[in-house]
Image (cartoon, rainbow, N blue to C red; front, side):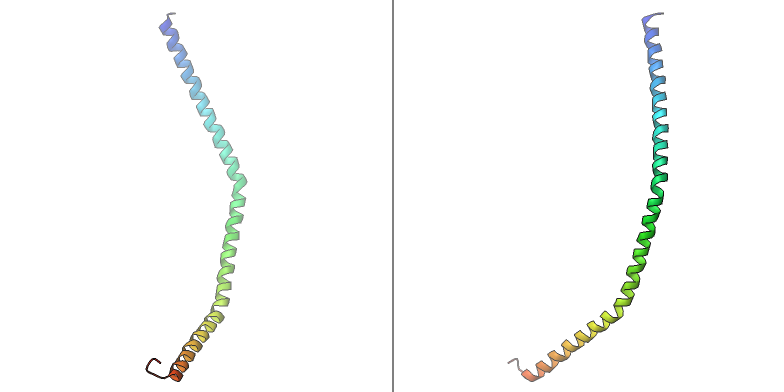
Length: 96
């Protein structure tokens, strides 16, 4: 066996060995990711449900508070406009 044949044989064996290690590593990483997903899926579902409940709660709270606050805002705006109108008349016209 010549040196060039020995080098070619070692090269082929190292390529086969590193390819096997790469495939084995990918399989291990895939298994780890699958197990991690199975552990985290219930947590993600629970957080999704919690976010949906919080959204519904804030929507209902907004609906309950919108009417009274809108009425108070309209009343305050109208009162301010009325007061400025009355004070504007009492000052008289002409900008004094």
